[in-house]
Image 1 (spheres, rainbow, N blue to C red):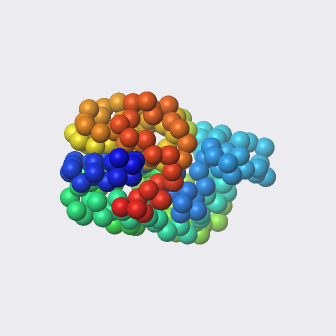
Image 2: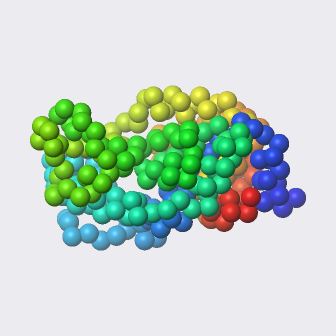
Length: 241
């Protein structure tokens, strides 16, 4: 049986499916990844610091203006992006009662834009921002349109995006829910991730179901554990469903 036929058969014969996705899910919506060719970490900036350092907690606290200069550039790309065929297919699978949850390492909100309801965002979202002093909520547009480092319009406190920066831990509640859905799944589809970012990549070890499916353009360190490996763009694969 051809890999695509095998993939479709697995989807047809199971209902408790969980999708675990990385940056590759959003690259087909023209959002560059971090480590790939043309990714954020390979781009030259006007600053003397590396992008990794500039996206750390200490850098946000010590150099907020420079932090937001880089952050808003990245945020702007995400706000202009549209869901692709992978996002829309996953939303359809959820509507059909096939997909239990989407677990994503992305912060762009494209799964929700496509119609997915149960989305677990391991690294947070650009669409949630909070004043560090009083806790007031602000949307992504407020941050994007602000001058320099965005400040609260009530108390003047510095605003922080609800995204996980370097040196910060993942949200325990999100981790707990992710472990629940992965451990209960019959089929786990991992797509658009090379599975090198921990602790997120380690969460797949909780899967004890029937079929582990890996969809990624390049090989991953977990390919040998998978029941099915498809080396292709994830939008191309889901576009054939």
